[in-house]
Image (cartoon, rainbow, N blue to C red; front, side, top):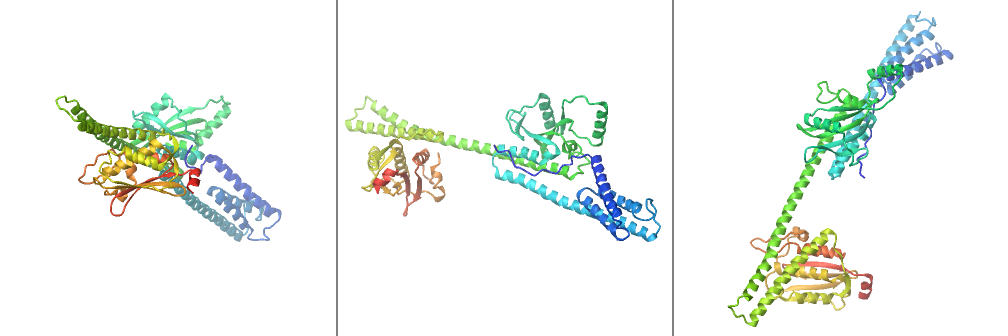
Length: 561
């Protein structure tokens, strides 16, 4: 299952402030006193007058890896320890010679400036890396919206990205709640694992609805069952949390409104513990003070980008729904139009002819009765073909079409179709060009008969009356090609593919040509079921040529060769 994009995590500050200061002080003391002990043990001063410069290594290291505070502490400790242990008189903070005072003060200033410069260089490098990382994260989020067209997968990518990016801040899970048709918030996507069976408690549901109505974020605390600690432990824990509050002891579920242009799209549910969730309330965009931490500010930038993605997803979904409705309306109108014409016209003809036969006051001769009978038969065949096309189209679209293939002589099948279509082809000359060595082809007799019938009916409908038709059969080593050419207006090049879509018809200005627009769609479905191809091309001098192919089996290829 697609779970979203994997983005690099935003750096987290999981250690408390007082703990960082303690560690920085410890590193500064250990580093500078180690260097002092090294100089004192090997009596390098005053043999090497400028040996104090070695302290700058630890100052640079702390400024580059820890903090400016650590570099300042190291500079001051180096200044004091060098005076106390190495400059006569030893073990007192006094200096006899003025030049040693000047050298030591210059060392202190140099160490402080070096530490500050190194720390600011480190900050600049970190800011550049952070901006690059943030740009990469936002780019990946936007790229996902472009590459992935499914609204469901887009929403899943957003919540998964929230967990991937801000997991190191304590975000353990996220869920996206969007209103349904009744205005109730339901979970559309969640991470790290999506399940359609996630249910909100009544209190959570009510709180989420309130956030969606008011546009103000809110917290739903969940207290973890813990044993009662010793009073001293409880005191220490309370002191630690007062200095650096976290939600490790009390998990939090925070509901954030997703707003754009004064409109609330939904609610983001964040569950977890850590600095980010604890700081969201302080850095909320509605708060006048705003955000001072760059990572917390990026959270809101990321959330704004996610909101824009959700808005585009909503608009895309609405556009798709509107397009589906428009297509449904067009298909419904086309179907009603075709049914009203292709059903009512032959029925009206049959009813009229039958009514004439039932008129007892008129004595019809045998020739007239035969004409009436042939008319009824022709219109009944026309009805049968239309109903057959509808049934075949429904089977093709439903995947229920089954072929009953048998080896059958193609020339025999073509002549049988022409014989059945004599009423339709009355007054026309049909030139048939079939080679003598056409192999026997494995095909579904009824379906290929339906294809040829539809093509002949289409040629008669779009070509001038009494104009000739030309049917040609050609064989290759792998397939048989059947071409039917007429002398009609042809098909515009931009519509040569679309004419095989259901209910699509080529309209000629000033002409009302009957038809349902499903015959060629049925032809394509039946030919593709035979693993063949069908296409249309215009002939020189005017007219259309419809060609379809039937593949030859290995046995047919050998017999043909």
